[in-house]
Amino acid sequence: GEDVEQSLFLSVREGDSSVINCTYTDSSSTYLYWYKQEPGAGLQLLTYIFSNMDMKQDQRLTVLLNKKDKHLSLRIADTQTGDSAIYFCAERTPSNDYKLSFGAGTTVTVRA
Amino acid sequence: DTGVSQNPRHKITKRGQNVTFRCDPISEHNRLYWYRQTLGQGPEFLTYFQNEAQLEKSRLLSDRFSAERPKGSFSTLEIQRTEQGDSAMYLCASSLDPRDTEAFFGQGTRLTVV
Image 1 (cartoon, chains in turn orange, red):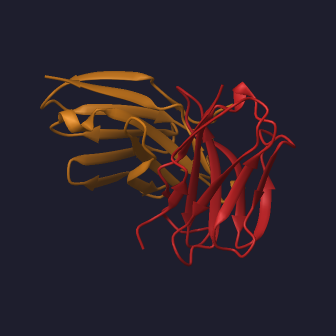
Image 2 (cartoon, chains in turn blue, orange; image 1 turned 30 degrees about the vertical axis):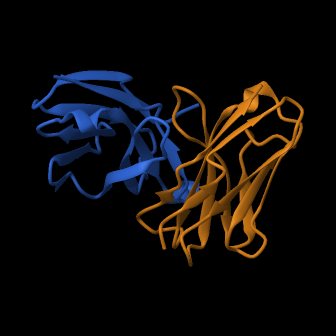
Image 3 (tube, each protein chain N blue to C red; image 1 turned 90 degrees about the vertical axis):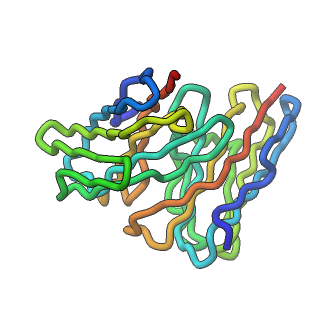
């Protein structure tokens, strides 16, 4: 079973912003991650945030963390066709000896 | 160092055969993880190593599965008497230290059992 939950699908027009949401359950989560997976490939780390932060920005990516609601979001500005992929939210906690626990993934489709 | 390397990339095998996958982590990375990913799901933890010691095995890892990391460098994952339900992508990841921020993943080995 998954302690990390995500919406399954997102369709966005090229040039618009994408927002992918995630909820997690472990309040002691130390690190929260976003990974990207293209068809047939492994996982590419996009960005991460420490649980003592509220926001992190990295070029087109903005991560927002609401610790009270255990809610994490990833915003992709100016979405491009190359952003079409599956995006996974993951948490990593000392209580779980730093193993990664993943959500089921959000499939993002960028349409022209 | 070019990152985490997994071989083979694809494996098709007949039900009942044994298969072995290899993972070469990034040099000097102490932690090595194995995950399994089935279609439409996120990766699920299988097992992990700290150097050569196997620290934990998930209940997903039946006794047909065995993993080793004999010298604390590369690791192998063997599946005996494969079943169709074993068809999945097997992913390996490594990190320098348990608390290291980043865990780097390989490209995975896609297993198809026919």
